[in-house]
Length: 173
Image 1 (tube, helix red, strand yellow):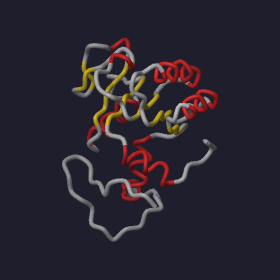
Image 2 (cartoon, helix red, strand yellow):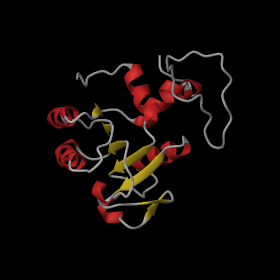
Image 3 (tube, rainbow, N blue to C red):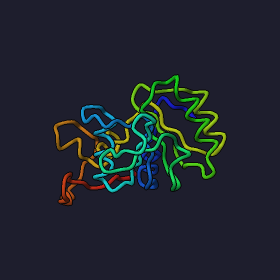
Image 4 (cartoon, rainbow, N blue to C red):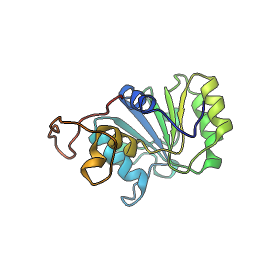
């Protein structure tokens, strides 16, 4: 697959189908991007499981932190990687060793490893690289447009008021 660009329907399909997300490289430091991405995804109704060996056994945003993916006691739909590109092959190895494979491996902004992505895709796992699920969710839900950025989503639908964030939900176009 070409990982230079993704169709909106591909990203929306992923965000609409996953429920449980493991965040590898999660941080308890509230100024770190992994922290506010976790907070956002939790607010959108996803089950988010932090993975950080240095914080294992403690909570981040009320969620138990695990040292590695294999320690997580429930099936994972998506692995979101907040680590440097060089760490991706070892994380993909860890993913491929799981009893139940996730549907998706997602790497954050600036994180890309084409060979590791090809191995994951050969095992039937969808891959998204160099993107942020928080940004993509907000863009596809039209939320970014409310903040003065053109999201490309035009709608006459009234936003659904919820605690925390307002959300239309992710739309497939």
